[in-house]
Image (tube, rainbow, N blue to C red; front, top):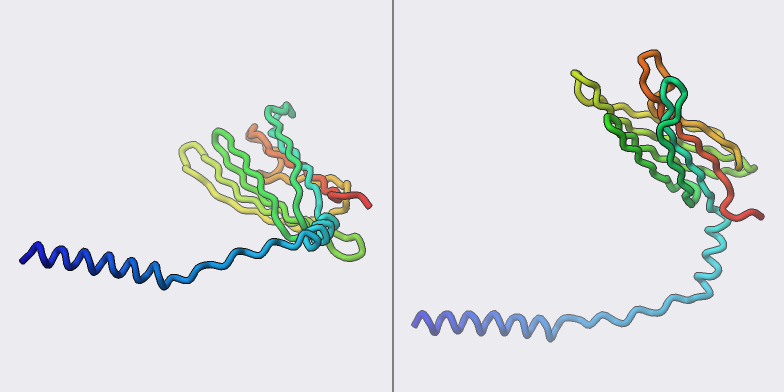
Length: 168
């Protein structure tokens, strides 16, 4: 009797799967993308795109450069570009968001999050946010850890230059 009940359950489960398979709607094939639309759309984004040339370096108290890293990233107005710097006792995560305004005026929002491991004190966390007016081909400096101090700590220096992605 138990075998008959177990077999009945199996048949019911298989039947439910078959019914579900039969009545599941078939997804229609996706319509192809109109290529003329894509060709028209891409130039619009190219006119709004900017190239961010980012150079980050660590400068010691004696002005010796101990580390340097460069990136070129393409973005559009209002879309952030991220950069993470990881050292032995510090992590810096920054976002640069360019905003293109009318009349050839632009601004750059620089946001930073900094985690520093301070001996005998633990991890310190700080944030920074600045809005900086910027023009094409103008260099802007960002110091997420602040300027050099008397304690002999190193300084993180980020230089950013914004350029149009395509020159008119």
